[in-house]
Length: 487
Image 1 (cartoon, rainbow, N blue to C red):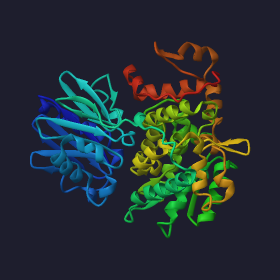
Image 2 (image 1 turned 180 degrees about the vertical axis):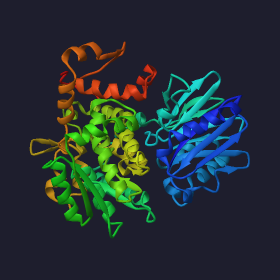
Image 3 (image 1 turned 45 degrees about the horizontal axis):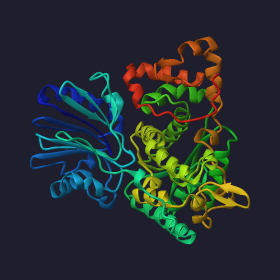
Image 4 (image 1 turned 135 degrees about the horizontal axis):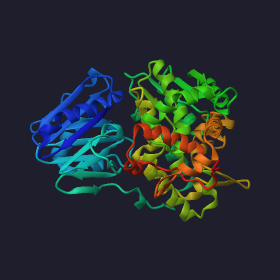
């Protein structure tokens, strides 16, 4: 919905211009006008997606709120109105009942409250300077105010008189072994269809990023049921598997399909822009973000306002190959860890690349009800033995087996950049431009932070130009891997 920025200080008057500058750095998160409130100790500001989106009830009496996101069970009401109403009726505990992606800051001028959705679909950062605290949707907005920038933890709210309080903890979700296979298949299908439907707005130009994998294909087929004309988007190098499979799905469901074939030079040319918006140099995240950026640029050119994506399924339905080597209890714990980590990984990538073009992400697999239900399912429903072969995301595949071609339903997992066929180009470019001597000399960028490859060093050097403070390193999510080539 928008980029938000706020300051809470005893001497808030001197931060008015600072807040305006913060919003200016977030203007890509909204192409409309700014909204700014001054309430004694608090300054709240945001960029709107468009003028028509200006809520009528951002301020009620002495209380004002800025929000980025959607409250899904009240889609026709501006989120700010819902937040203020529920806050006045229930106090801060109302965040437990909010359904949807959100980050908000609320104040009555004396006290301040901020909160972020349970898995961090909407970004939020904060920094403290003297006795003041600042909040913003992205790191870049806080640069220059303080060297120490922190990630606002998902599933928490902050009160100026209480500090941080956790209101949601997915690690407490236990497996329910009483769920039957038939029940699981039926409910997974039902919940995914419902999650797609409640995110669908008929007054928006909506598209789907389609890789031809089971996750994005399931989302696409659900969206097609809601729209006579659906736009799907795919990118890749010439002959890549994603392009081929996406065409097959698009033909099957009858979508209006768009694709862009890119090469090595396209990827190299956009790297600075990708890393600036992504706010990370993690090797695997940047690789996938390059693909996301190209998709987002194409979708924006075609006039899209919101994009459905398949991210989030691997983390709750066990889509990663290494999970097959773990014991069931270990798998359950790892899925919870992956889901909690996603706000620094796939959710960050999707948000930043789409917001670089002022579009809104739609992530049905990250729906609260789907996450909770999927994490309750026994491991065998996700990693299922099919004639001696362990199939990942089994229950998801079977739930939609009648809706998609068999080769799509049973297609094996590929990382975003692998399916697009681009995985080796950037590594080759780094190898050509960074010597072994330079890599071993520069790979240790902090006492607790060592770069894992020449490719990652290449990304870090670009990142450091935009974000020069070492303290920002603490905001970086590292994709875990056991086998990295350090050349």
